[in-house]
Length: 370
Image (cartoon, rainbow, N blue to C red; front, top):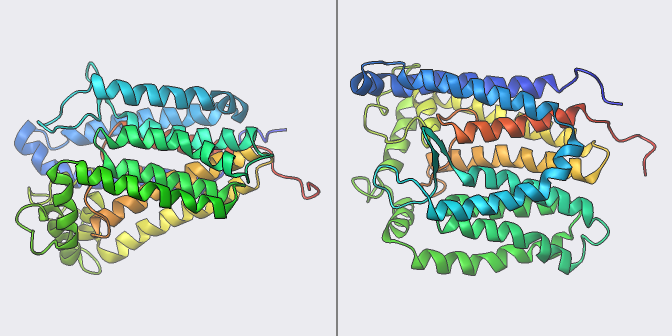
């Protein structure tokens, strides 16, 4: 029987803490530009508070849904994700004159299907593992499980959103390693993906090549293609050990574009220094530990793989964001979960959090189970 009104409180506090940190630094990042452009320093903060409220509602609703219902929704969610990724290639909205097809618009509401696609991959692999648990170690099952995430990754790639496409492949392989697939067979998957990836990058537009070149030589390209990388590195250098103080950073003053979304970790490094950035990293590591702990103790394979996969999704996106900010990965559009400004990403992460909290409420494996 489910334990009424129970959930992992430490995990819940971690999510709420990240949202609070996000609100503080979104305010710091946007107050001056908001005042200059909208005559209201709290323009973005008000919108972020609204999104946090909406995200919290989705977290609660996700927590209240029994895992059995999520199990039934797994394949329909995957089909919906593929449908939306196809639709966005046709009926996308163009932002800031960028030649990308990542967003769908419904009135004032904007939604990025690739965020939903990440979650759908986790659900697909969890349900596949549950339905095919007797044959997971076969080569046929390994390739069959990889096929759908690969299709989703390809659709995201041609938006183009190369970073998210790579993320989906990495997430897929991590989940398959953690499930009951044969790890030796899973090792073939990166080898199959790399030639395709390099081929597509070579055929892509010049800006993708420029980003990779800038990543390899940021100082030599600091005035053009390496501008964001150099400014992010400068933010960490300015922050030092203790930072310049919350609100006192200067990189947000038109030096580092998209600082409230793609580069908020650099702002954190500048304003609260290495110590503050390290604390944030430890929060994500704690989520990783706690999420895996509650998942592996679940009493069926669907719940186990779902919980581990959603934990990987949250933490891996945080790692990708931080890696971009410290110049360990080429620049691409990764928000920092629960911290960066944004709607669709925050809501999707809140859904992941709600499901993880639900899993912590589910029955545990008996010590007598075989």
